[in-house]
Length: 64
Image (cartoon, rainbow, N blue to C red; front, side, top):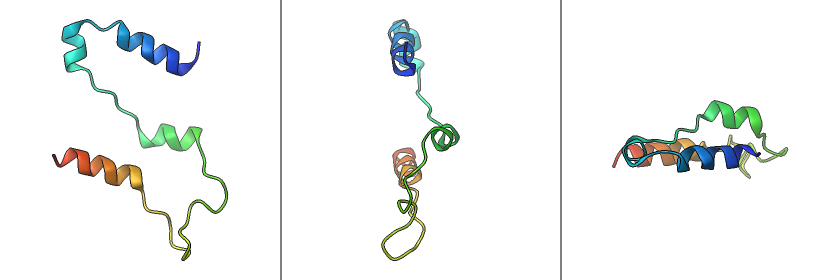
């Protein structure tokens, strides 16, 4: 069983009250440990470090 299938099973096993309170949290640490960018993807065309788009989206969602 894949990690995705396990997560889906856990979600589907929630009752209505649990589902209403549930939040899915994905930490930046686990993403960095499991996925690395190909060479050259960590910087822009001008050589600057690539902005953290995930963090920007998260901040945007939290400000609502």
